[in-house]
Length: 105
Image (cartoon, rainbow, N blue to C red; front, side, top):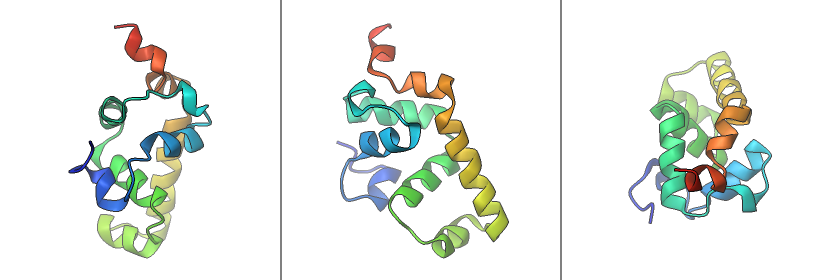
């Protein structure tokens, strides 16, 4: 379903829900079940760089490869990861990932 996405470049499985559950500290059952819709929400809430960083980091890509990909120094990479995961933990962002958010439209 997400075959030609940034996520699939680094992950063999469509495990977006599992990774978001882990990093957003949400129950897996609360998160939008449709992977395509969930990925669309993720794309809307994160910048292209943040989405790619999230995909690479959760796939276990080494920091060296990520620094080369984004032309970051050690400090810049650490700061970018901190900013990304802080953003994912914000309540207003987490609410967008909930199944009830798409049912309210």
